[in-house]
Image 1 (spheres, rainbow, N blue to C red):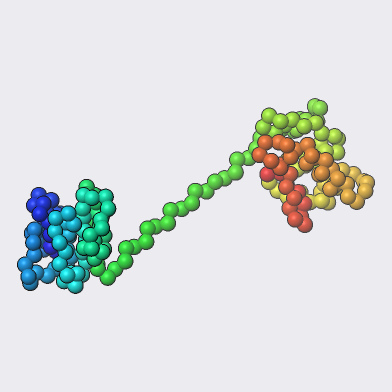
Image 2 (cartoon, rainbow, N blue to C red):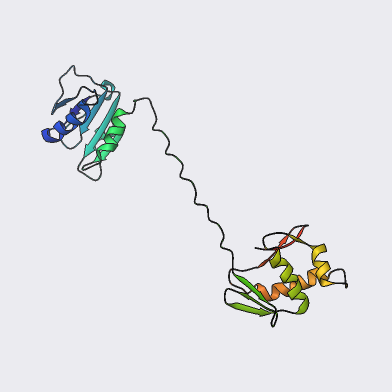
Length: 203
C-alpha cells in the first residue's frame, strides 16, 4: 500500500494503522517511476494521482468540502478530513473486486394496538369508553354485553339472535346500526367491527 501525501505526520499515522495488519506501507510525497501497489491512499490537496492502472484501488482524502479535481474520479472513495479511521480501514481491507456486504435489515417495530377501556354498567344501561358515555336501550345493552363478554372473538348472528329474542329477520343488523350510531363517536373510532360472513366483534 502507498500513502501519497506531503503531510508526513498524517502519513505516519496511516503507516502505523495498517502496518500491524500485515500490510506493507510506503509513505511518500511523490512516487518513483516503477512503484506499484495494490492500494493507493491519495492526498488530493497536495499530490497528483499517477495512472490509475498501476493500482487495484485508489482512496482519496481532502480537507475541502467538494472535490472537482480529475484525480478524484479514479478514487473508489473520497473522505473529507477529519474522518473516522474505520471508514478508511473498511475500504482498504475490502478486496478490490468485492462489494461491501449489505447492511443487516433492521427489524420493524411491532406495535400492538392498545385495548380501549370499555365499561358497561347495569344501572342506567350506560356504556363508557375513554370518557365518553352512551345510554343504551334494553336490546342494545344485551347485544353489547354479549360482545364484551366475548371481546376479541367473533359473535355470530345466531348468538345475537338468542339474546335479542323473536322479531324480524333483520333485527340483528338494525340493533348493530343503532349501537354504531352511539359508539362510533367514541375516541379512536369504531368500536364494533363487522367480520365478513361471520358476525361482529369488539376489539
